[in-house]
Length: 143
Image (cartoon, rainbow, N blue to C red; front, side):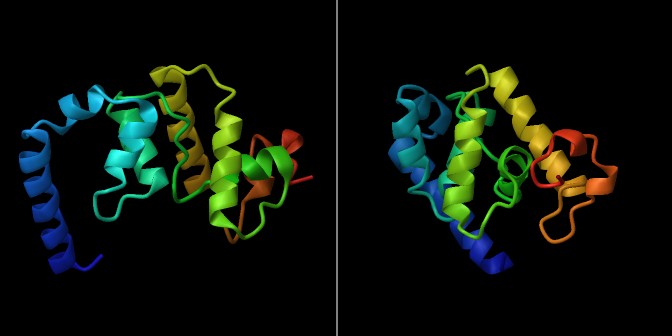
């Protein structure tokens, strides 16, 4: 990201939080439904579905099935095999799979962190390290 652009966006976000949310975004969002939280967060620059879901989860606003935006393909690969090219479809499929977990902050935060780690360390997009993966015997992509 361009530092000057980032600074402009941060100033815009701070101004909006102050003016539209009375300086307490968390309290304002806590009064909303999960879908309203997602919609409100997506009005901020640079925040799409993955970012809004992650913020809602880690801010403990809603235990959404957030998927790490850098590696939504991990869960899809393990469960279904090759993931295809459509990011939004891959993200939605991973989110559906995570929705089977208990809808608690603890379970969903743990799943998010484990998926991010697995994607960063082993299940890399271009060169997955299947031979080192403990999930290999159960992975549709590796088999």
